[in-house]
Image (tube, rainbow, N blue to C red; front, side):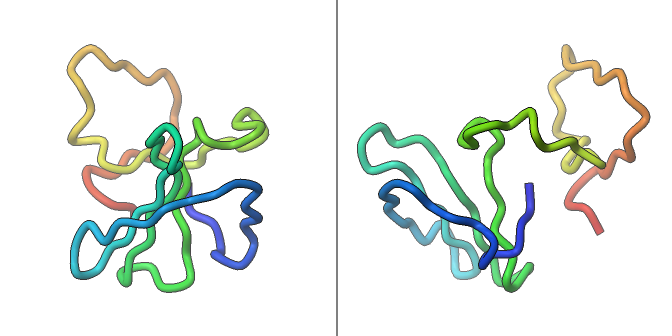
Length: 88
């Protein structure tokens, strides 16, 4: 999920890893759980993993990204737009 970087409040420690020339990921230094993704492709935006939120049910999705990579057994039963790769 994408958020404005300045709107996110962190309550724990994070470590960072530059996974490419344009992307940085953060993770929990204790358990290794992925927490965030930042890229120069979306300046000022921070992508979070729903599982890392205090209340993931509070956020309703409005599209599916990278739908072309969905596993064959995954069947989504909604009418949300599906983008084969990144959202426009």
